[in-house]
Image 1 (spheres, helix red, strand yellow):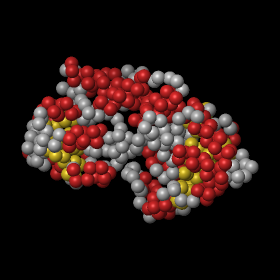
Image 2: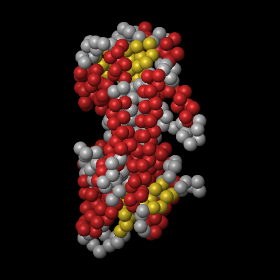
Image 3: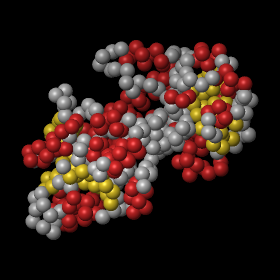
Image 4: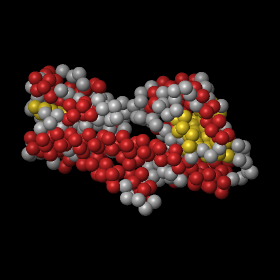
Length: 434
């Protein structure tokens, strides 16, 4: 099947590449001509494990194409995926200007029946408005259907998530569109894989509900960890016991210094804005957002207690991205810690396997960047573990300690066992750990 994809950002490029792997012919479009040219050269604008290899393979097989021509893109695909960005506005609501610009283009150039798929995360009512805009801009008397098909792709595991989804959600009024979408995902369908057919608004809300629940679960265990710090309990054992309850499960019960990225914070705020727009005060979600912002700074009081004067102290930051296996620093906890340390006159040595270039763009020479975690720790007064990259789990801490000025380790993700770290000569400070 011929499929068009508007947007070559994270969702669009992963979706287009994975659809091409299923055997479809996929044309990906972006208004950024420079970006299209770099993609044609095999240069991927962000880090996602396995994506570059997948893109190059499908380009070579002539299953994946890139263009900046909207008319060609609309006319190419029998199914058109809308994967453009939906950034946050100042009030937290999703900015849908790009979504609707694509809808306008589709209306201008559509010349036969097609299915238009909103893949980006969008609030309830977007599919309805998309249909209206396309009808308003139609140049030809043709039929079309709009489908809400939200993505559930985790950064760092997006290809696996596409190939092994736990669900496929399709919001549509049309049986014809539903049948066509089943053909799109034919290679992913299994007897055990739920394909949920529902209406537009329900499909749109499912994605927000999904992410907001996970964000709430993270904020809950972070709050428990903070209480553990006050009463002397160990959150690792508390979380383990909770996870043994089949109603709760152990997933997303890992306390730390807050969640970040392009999904959870944005989606929580967007659902808050949607609820308020519909005259409802979502107090629980508002508190989740507030708690998460506070959690990103939870290490600083501990650091200041140990180092009352941060001026000229050197801190080694291990990890800059908001999570492992990505170079994304959007809403990253590292940014809050960096700004706080710099404001107090501290010096920062940093290492991250993928996110250093993005961080350099923000801080330039205010931070010293190093190629290895060992180099970053040399001469430091303290290590602050910010991102739980696997590279940091099995380091020789005893040898690293010998190269440092002092022996403090602040574990923002609780990846180390306190007793083992202490045996290596460090003073250990975790989140809710003894």
